[in-house]
Length: 138
Image (tube, rainbow, N blue to C red; front, top):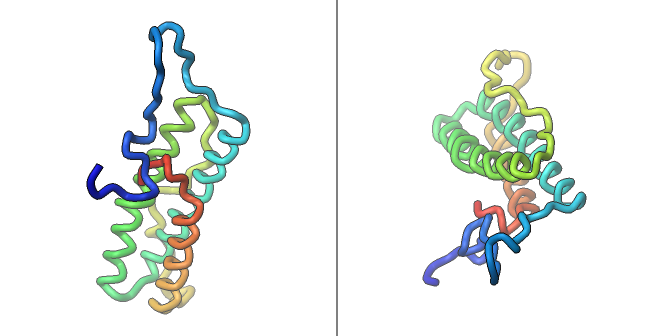
């Protein structure tokens, strides 16, 4: 298999194995527990996006802002898209999504140090890594 990530399904998130005729196969079902977990993971990612957008607006260091932007666009949005796709596949209503941008906030009203912002994001990344299901593929 080569160099695959130990937490990822090498066959993709939607891989199903079935022996027999296709018409005898039943579509994948989702239990209430699985639906609840997907919904909770999605709501948690929405919260992460909202907080990270705020942190991006208050960050002072150019490199830190680029790292935060990368995390928003490449990591969190990818995870959100995968979760939303799974919820939509099973017709589970989505939680309320945060606004796409928080650029209207005044920087002068609150001061966050770059150290504080980094620590908040770093702690959030650790929590996401622990709770993110291996079958999600990200």
